[in-house]
Length: 319
Length: 319
Image 1: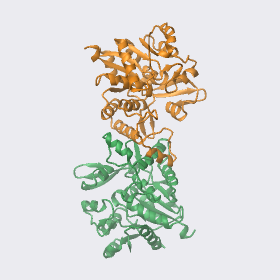
Image 2: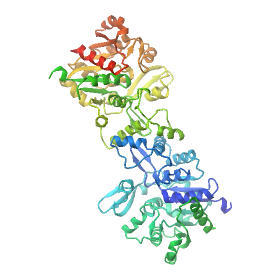
Image 3: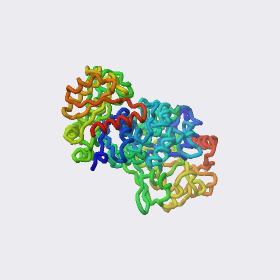
Image 4: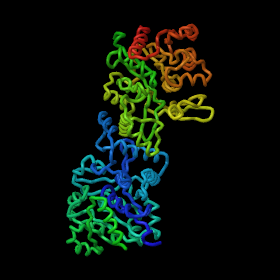
């Protein structure tokens, strides 16, 4: 098996991670990319099982994501939300008509006894996606955001409160009893992987839930494939989402160095390569002192070309 | 309290019963009409709690029923169903976008601990309905249709199989453990009711589930208000739905007499007045022999005037 035929495993949350996953999928052969998706922000809403990060990955890899909204499906319509609004129902979590069909379908399949992995597989097939998307586990893991005043379920914090409360920490209910995705564990135990990529997703609420599943981070560490982490913080800002705001509130330096420190503290020897943006080149030495191989690249992914270029940079880095 | 101020209680299933309920609501004062709705065809579908007869009553009394389809909401759109079809999901039970909002709202409210009665009340208020709609009970009662080959959940028989299998009987799982709606039981125990109307709904799958709730039919019988039943069979045919087909398959005469016999056999002394269509006048003597007061009227309700006229006929009959 040559390197070019080996598989790539990418850990991802939603939007930011999905961009790099799309770049990797574009440059790899069909089936070569495996994405391990965060499900720590899955929740039950209006009777439906909603998996926001899996859906963002599905829609992005299918080329159907809504670029202007930054979430959901392109060309979406909103008839159900409008009717629910007239009923004075809960409309803070916006569910488009087409997106709702995904949730209805998933909920029905799960009720019929299918696993989340099977449901995700079938959705990927129906959307024509040639990569594998794996939920991090089957169990419901629920992220709680702690703030000075109160604790909030993640989607309430993220969508309803638009990340306004200052965070003091996070917990992932159910994570200690969750079992890591067996297909991913088999990949990690075998010799099929050439590279493990931690996408530029939020360290606290997208990557930590994955890594805190029992045996997950140690299996990633012990796998012979190198782990490449892409910093979600560029020039002291998060490209998308509340990562930078969270770091500030938690008293962590809001830099790529702060990100590197977070991973080195919690998951020693996990990360082999740390990719920082070219605008952060000055941080390279400081990060290298943590024992990481630092690589510098343009990491901001605006165009499809940007995504593919960063994907190619990561694969070549390891070769 | 004069008769004109007293309340009317109408037992109803879906479409046929809702027509008469609308006629009664039109001619009565605000709040004077109480409708006791069948929930024996309620079911869980795609994670949602669906109450078809309650919804038909809600939409009809709100003046929002889809007259051309014969079910659902007027001006409905179908974006979610189209998307679900693309996912090869279950689309045999057609859920319009606006209708879906009702189910999502109900499911969320029930999950939050509201009772079905409260949810129905709030929906009626939000739709501007001035009558009271009461679910027959809070418990899930599930109608099973027995046929020679197999048993079918009601909606599978009714919608998916379009009533094609020949029926041999019906059962209502959970009915023996259900408690009759307490507000209706209070009405029946008091002296507020002037008339009880059994709407021209399907005897087997719309009215029987209501009457077979423990204490329900005996409480209706023992209430001082007379019970007026309107035959759902006219000229040997059902105006809508499978009642006539069912009677044929069960070996019951497919006439108003067959309907009368069904009620007299199962619920002795329940019915006081039996209203048959003018085209069935020849059956009056035969029905009277069962011990019922027979009244003859035009019972086919095409226009809104027809509905009001039949409502007025029933109220005057009892006066």
